[in-house]
Image (cartoon, rainbow, N blue to C red; front, side, top):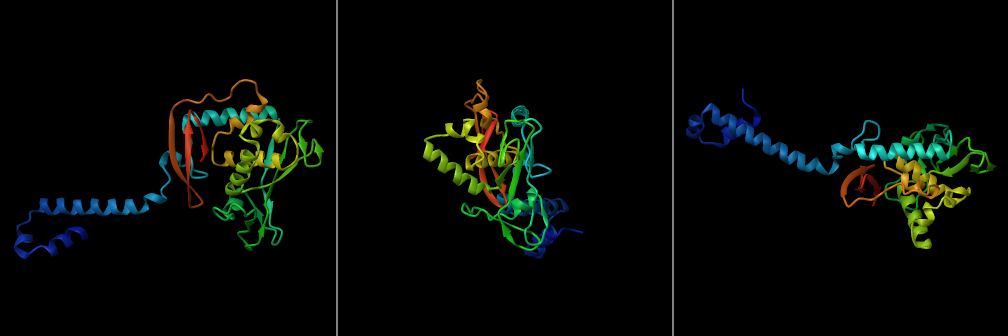
Length: 251
């Protein structure tokens, strides 16, 4: 029995040509046809494929060894600044009481909507502003109700967060104000933006050690000339990720 590709090839040939074709020729033509079909199929689906180097069991992303070291160091430094830190991003739908985890919240955001602060409940489709809380055992930690209390923040989508951060950078003339530890000290919009960056970078396995620079005198990241760009898909929307000297960020 021959494949559908080999039968098509034979039917298109004249009887004399078909009879003169050897078994070896028919197999060669069938294989060439199959390879050609596979190339077309791969080309059509290429835009939806996440590069294997960035895939992960949990979020469809994985890290290189260099980035993994940066993330591990960032986690250690964050723990040293905020002992026993706990970030709780579980929400309850105010309409149907369905419990939403981080994945549910992210799935409910409208892609590319930089003015949309709400997520959508997967059960009843009700829209609401999600929140997360940050708490730690440091007595100097300034929460929403004073020192030593949890800090409650609106959970922003990457597109809203990008717009807000760009506004801060434009207003202050650079990123130095964001890296200054005073930016995250008070329980206001600045702290909400800073902790949203930490939450977003942790979710997508991106190094955030540079955000902690204001608390340390030594340079935490030494940039190198190497520069690599990868494209990943976030909820169906392609984002360009730049990796420079072991650290990376979303452009």
